[in-house]
Length: 237
Image (spheres, helix red, strand yellow):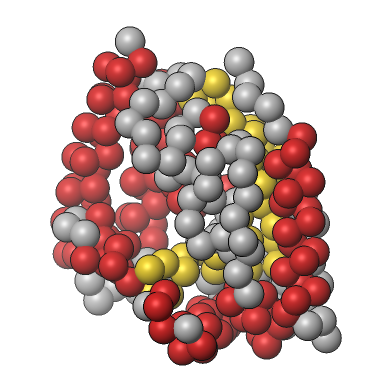
């Protein structure tokens, strides 16, 4: 049954990727707010399918910590789930991504209309400069910027090295950082087809003031919150 439910969800993702991408491309030159309204329906619908078909629901703790204006989200990265759910929890946002994702048929084409910060991860200092320059421009437009500081998805119970790029953006732009922890990897694991029923927990931490702080201090504070929360998570039945 888990296999069948997972297959139905995957089919939903494929169909909606094609439909939403074709729709948003018709509005290629439309304002961002129009494009985002279209693209966000992908997340809304597939979270509903995930709940209805795969029996995976989620709860959010700390919504009161979401600031009234744009900020930088530092999120744990365990699954594909958070790339979808963050769009429904936070105001209009965009992502820091590896540029290769934009080359994927349909998914990448649609993603490009979210004005992501697409970087060449092998570019070193130039990649960080891209994050700073493009990220600051988007924040000034009122967009939230999502960064996965570990850079890649990590399995539950493990921890990747937190990279400095997002913290440098925060230090230089002065925008606050909102740390986010979750346990989606227990239900939709990295690289796994099967989606296991249960309730995912997402915890949003208090905004981290970045004014006058060095990037290393910002990163350490965000990492401390996220990893402390991760230590408390257990799979929900």
